[in-house]
Length: 367
Image 1 (cartoon, rainbow, N blue to C red):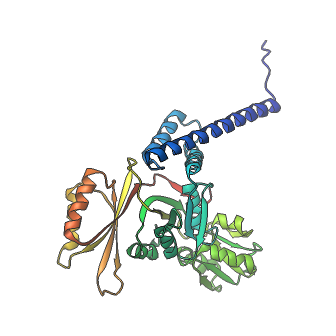
Image 2: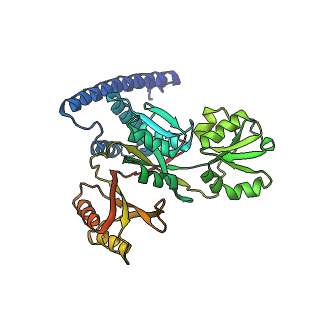
C-alpha cells in the first residue's frame, strides 16, 4: 500500500514562494548584467539597442519552452524584462499623443514597457517636433487603421519634420463606451477622436440615434471630459477606464472585429537589421507619363516586396503628390540598397524614413 503523502495547499504555496524569490534574484542578476553591457557599449560607442539579439532571445526561449508556458504570455513577460533591462542602461522618454490613456499611450507601453518615462503632447505634429529637436529620445504616433485607413496628420508630418522610424507596434483596438456612472441613460453627448467615432458609427446609430457625437483630438481627452461631466460618454481605451476612474457602459462597440491600428516609433536614427525588417520611403515622382509604374517596376525587378503605398498631396502645389512606400527588408540588405539607389535616380524627391524591425504579433488593447 502506497504511503506517498499528497502535498497540501500550504506546501505548494511555499514552493511557489521559493520559486518567486529565485526568479526575483535572477532578475536582479540580469539587470546587473544589462548595466555591465551598457557600460561596455559606451566604451566601444555601440548602439544600446540590438534588434537581432532580441529576436534571437525570443526565438531561443520559444523553442526551449516547447509550448509548456503559453508562448504569447512568455513573449510578453520577457518583452517587459528585456525592455526594463535595456532602459536600465539609459532611461528613455517617449512622447505620445496625449493626454494620458490614449491608445497611442497604450501602444507606447506595449512597445517600451512600464519603465520608460512618458510625455503627453497635444498633437501628432508636436510629437514629431519633440523628437526632431532632441527633447525626447522617442515618439510614438498612429499611422494607419485596418478599417479607416491612413492617419493623414502622421503622413503629413513626415513631410515637415526630420525624424527616423525605428520601430512599429500593432494594437488590436476594442472600443468601450464609458461614463462616470456606467448608466447609458446619463449620456447626452458621446465624445472621442474622429477615427473611433467613425469605427463605431453603426453601433451609435443603432443604439444612441438621438445622442450627438463630439470629435475631440484624442480618446484620452474624451475620457477626461467624461470624468469631469456626468452627461458625457466617451469612447476610450481600457487604460482610460483605470486612469480616469470611469465605468464601462458597453464593451466592444466597434462595428468590425479585428480592428487594428499600426503605430510607428520615431527616433533620431534607425536600428541595425533584425532579420525581419521594414523600410519606409517618401518619394516624389517626375512629372511624366508612367512615372509611378516605372518606380514600381524597379521594386519588382529587384525582387522587393512592397507592403504599402499611400499618396498625399503636397501643400501649396496643385495636383502634386508624394508617395509613402513600405518595403519588406532593411536598407542594409543588398536588394533594398540597390533598389533605393535606382529610385533616387528616377524620382524628383527621395527620403529614406527608416528601416526597423517588423511587428511580428498584434497586441491586444485590453491586455
